[in-house]
Every structure is written in structure tokens, then in C-alpha cells.
Image (tube, rainbow, N blue to C red; front, top):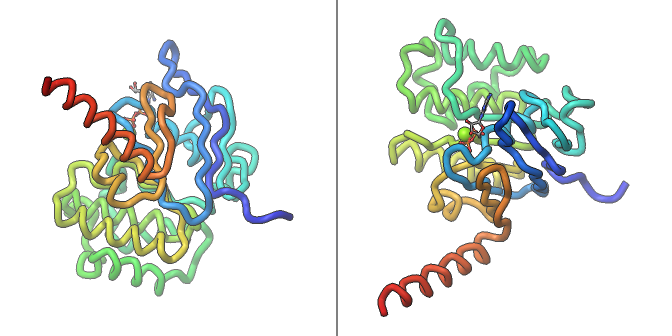
Length: 240
Ligand code: ADP
Ligand code: MG
């Protein structure tokens, strides 16, 4: 065997919703250990791509792998390698925070996960909310629980779908710090966002998705210098 497989491999993925061609041949490789941003406006296809990688939706054409496991043929192994923080705040309102994390642990067959759950609650500032019902939490707190839930089985790869959209500045900062720490510890991170500043602050490489196509993919430095050049020539022309 030569080396480890990429953390994520997306090959020629198309997705159609009836007439709508939401993904139009997406290729993407995220290497193990990277902190990668998928940047794009609303409706670009970011969540659709995440759902395909997470095995929650089928590609119309093409394939996706997580740590070398095909998300359709080898779903369980691919799912186990992945933690996904969904864009929508989906949760069961009747359980407490701790119960929510224990149920998720059970889903992965982890029966004695209490120490790790405590560490997640601490790390995400949720320790004093452990016995609170999910429905009583603020939006920001629910977002934190979703992050903890994604990490309950210590997946090597973490995908966060617009984790800071609609989140206040303070939580945004603390979430960023937490995710950066995970990346330093060796987790691969894919973050989707429509904030350039967020991609810029956090990630090594950035792919820009627009109308279902990747229109640019490069290191942060190269992408930003290209932007700056474009902007400089634009303002020069405007200034004349
Ligand atoms: P993003 O996450 O970048 O905002 P989405 O992946 O949510 O974009 O959506 C991409 C396009 O696909 C949009 O035009 C959206 O309306 C459409 N779309 C997403 N999910 C569905 C679905 N389940 N059925 C029909 N159209 C969908
Ligand atoms: Mg989305």
C-alpha cells in the first residue's frame, strides 16, 4: 500500500433535482490533515455536495469516497470516518443535551463513551447545559450540540456546513478556535461558508463553487492574490 488515501475524494459528481442541474461535474480532493473551505453563494450546491459525501443523498452520476471508502458501496465505513455538522438545526426536542450525545454514541455502537462526551461538553462550553432539554437551548447552543454530536465517534474527517451562519460574533470566535484545535490535533476539516473572511481566516485551500461548478481551487494565498489583482485593476479603471 502506498500512503494513506485522501480524506475526501469527489469524482465527476452530478446531481439533478428534476429539471434543476444542481451539481455539474464536481471534482474535489481533500488530503488528510487539511483545513479546506468550500466557498459559494446561497444555492451554489454546497449542501447538496455535503449530503452526497455524507451518504444522505445519491449522486445522479459520479462517486465520492471518505478515507478511501465509497459512500454508497461502503456506506458504514465511510459514515464512521465522517462527522457532519448540518446546516439546519435538526434535533429531537425531547432529549437533554447529554442524552442526545449518548443516543448518537449508541448509533455507532459506543456504549461507554461518557468520558469523551464530558470532554466534548467542556470543550464546547456546554457543561452546564448537559441536563437541559434541547428545545430550551438558544440557536447558538444548539449549534454547539450539533458540533459535539458530529464528534461523538471521533471521526478523522469533519464537515461543517455553514456552522457560523446566523451565529453571534462571540460564538463564531469560540467555534473557530475549537475547530482549529481539532485540525491541529490531526482531524481533516471541510468547512462550507459564504463568508470569504471565514475561509481566509481558517483554511489552507479554498474551492469556489458557483451554480454547481467549481470555478476556482487553490491555496488561500494564490486565490487571495488573484482577487487582489482583479480588484486593483478594477479600481484603477474605475478611478480613471
Ligand atoms: P447551498 O448549500 O450552496 O446554498 P444547496 O445545495 O442547498 O445550495 O442547493 C443547490 C440548488 O439545489 C438550489 O437551487 C436548491 O434550491 C436546489 N435543491 C437543493 N436540495 C433540493 C431538493 N431536495 N429538491 C430540489 N431542489 C433542491
Ligand atoms: Mg447550504
